[in-house]
Length: 81
Image 1 (cartoon, helix red, strand yellow):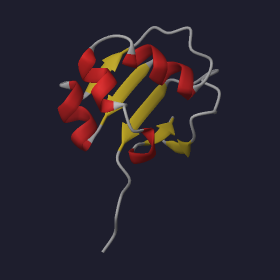
Image 2 (image 1 turned 90 degrees about the vertical axis):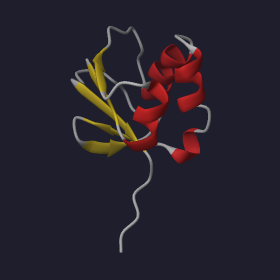
Image 3 (image 1 turned 60 degrees about the horizontal axis):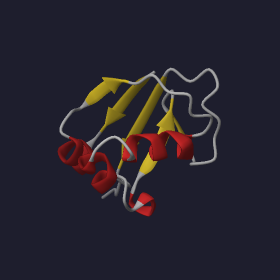
């Protein structure tokens, strides 16, 4: 699946996107796998209350299944104004 990173999440990880092969069943499982890769991922995902996730461009939460998902995007909360 394609994993996209935006804003400071991208800055901490160092890439805007990557293809990830995973056996993760949920978003939370994927985050745990990514955090175990390297320190930069662990740092980026250390406070999940500051990160939003979209699956195939639809806002989701950490407990959502990844079955059939092609794209996962991680980004900080947005503000309007």
